[in-house]
Length: 114
Length: 115
Image (cartoon, rainbow over all chains, first blue to last red):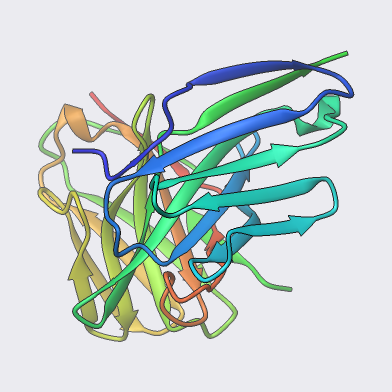
């Protein structure tokens, strides 16, 4: 089954509004959580990440919230702009038997309309 | 200039042909990855390489093999390609092991079509 899941394949937000992207995970051994941004025909790039020892991290217009008991993390983008339109991929990392790997969700396509 | 380079960008092959996808990085990163991206499935991990000749299966390794003979170069090989291997393939690298809070740097992807 999908270990990291983004239940919303798409989201549309008005310019200036708050975009909220959600991600759920199954494995409570995950200890690293990240959001990547991907434009069409481009490669994913890291936006923001957190470790499991914090429940919130802010970076400019971006905030990651981590709810470990609920196995859920989210990305909030304030003052959303048309250039925020992209696919957002959540990812969770786990160390298994000395080997680490990053598992990605399916992605949410965010459209910011002006 | 930190870069992950994938070749080729687009590739069309017939079913049963062998396919070689190449990836290089100029950052001396230890760890390299191959993912494939399909609609509705996100990025699925095929293989990880922790260093030269130190490769590990990801979540969907069946039908693929990899080769890493130099730290800066990681190849994905499809022996006898199948139509369900039509996908966009991304290579990535990270300084250490990805889940230890290391940023993954991705290549621009190879769009493979198997007819």
